[in-house]
Image 1 (tube, rainbow, N blue to C red):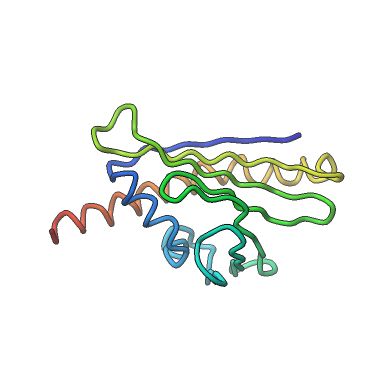
Image 2 (image 1 turned 90 degrees about the vertical axis):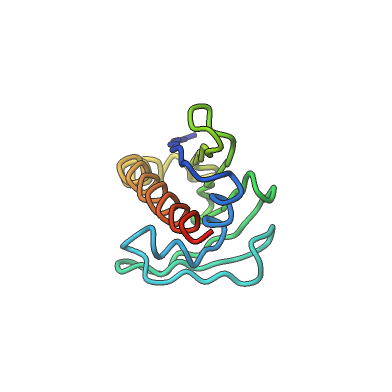
Length: 149
């Protein structure tokens, strides 16, 4: 089974980082390839969404696990396989009052081995860059909130 992880630390609190990330409308501001993100229902187990990018078909996904404020798992169905993205928000070990955000991607299912090369090639290079864009967006929003407080 293929698995890949990446993490960042933000100066924002865990609650602030979670609230920013779990508002899927913010995903458009983090990833320049995303045109639109739609979530049917709330950010909770069973919530289903669609991400529309500048290239490729719309990507459907489902929230399969949530511990509000600290972790979520999003499943992207692939024929006879699934790509799981597990997000964990925890206290930063190095930034006072900050947050560490970890993302672990993994393939599961009957055809996981068949998708491994394509998924790993696309994700292992792009995920760290995406995580860094997420950190910058959260930090910028946090700084703005602090100035306005």
